[in-house]
Length: 558
Image (cartoon, rainbow, N blue to C red; front, side, top):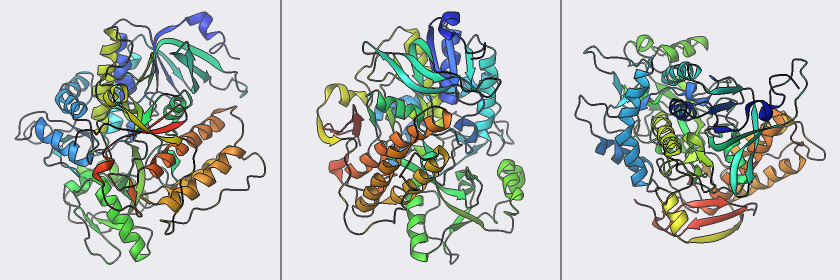
């Protein structure tokens, strides 16, 4: 073991707060906690700058004044995109506090694009009724947000643990006390034994699980680690059936798939099918566009459709990041239609929290994509993700600084703490297959012996893409569940980051598949070809906790 990892507890003692993850939610929280005088640690399995935040293109949706937009319109758009499952109080917090957090980020050094009149340049994206998305570098907003936060973090007293992989939550006497983690490899390349990094409060800010799928816009680090750790600890999670697929990922072998920002459609780019015909409203919410694309691709027997941006002026100066990516693969948006197909993009559900980020387990908090705050419902509104991280990361920090030590019955926690539920059986119960599968699920590799972690990960991604993609049904979910179970039984024991990420993906996949099998309707990002209609009786949350699945009895606000 290297000097850097030997005797962590003996040398450093317990932290006041350990933040696991280094995206916008985690760093926003850590900065505020450190400025409040607490002893804060940031643990990340990559480098501090390696988070999904830097991949976010479109921008930050916020009403910053100077136009006819309003927070009420932003709230209405968010509720409409969420298809009846948003928590209204959570969305009100988001839209009201968002502008303040954006201006705080600017004060920390973030530089957003400005218009000719000296005000913020604003874009309109799918599902938005007004142009309210501020951006940086045309379509490099996430990178700029991450840069500003990382620089600010290095200026605080926070302890930064880079290259540490969190394995499990430490739960003692009904309270989270930190995480068990694998330190970085030693100088000789040898793995170090697991280390307990202890803290009075632990914040999950680990991001999403896009690596469940073979085609995704998410970086390799997005393996559902926080979600899986919470599931194994019996912490309630919800809304995990709602994996949002971004409709306009570039159809190209590169992975993660280059994202063609929604702002392109906001500026006039058109969606065309294999025959060159328009077939859907380009500014509809992402779930609507992705479903329409999947249906058209199946009907025409093609692997991709087209984004026509030939009518956009000054493409290179307005979208320099996208322009460079297209040039690298030999495409000219001024003359070429751009091949596109939906790609796994954002998990709308996660660890259930109240409106200040507290989970059901004392000492454990969550913010950002790993959390289910109630903001996104069944489908996230474009460019609300960075805003959610800023807003709820800050609220979480303020709650800890205020001495809060457990969840309140607010937001999605209200029904969990005060309402009843309908038990739907064990988490690992296989769904009942019906005729008419949405797709053929490929069998995994030979499960006769332990699988290589990388090969098993690829097999799982193919299984999830075929069985639980944009459109799924009972038969496809059943096939995916059975194939994933074979992979789980043959998976190698956890001994390094690769096998640990595989274990997390397998646990996350079981949760997604089980929740998707229980929700027998089509709503938001969850589309069932065998249940194509939205059912008002299903305006309820599916909760997974302690190996069981339950449906909350209390209807959420429309």
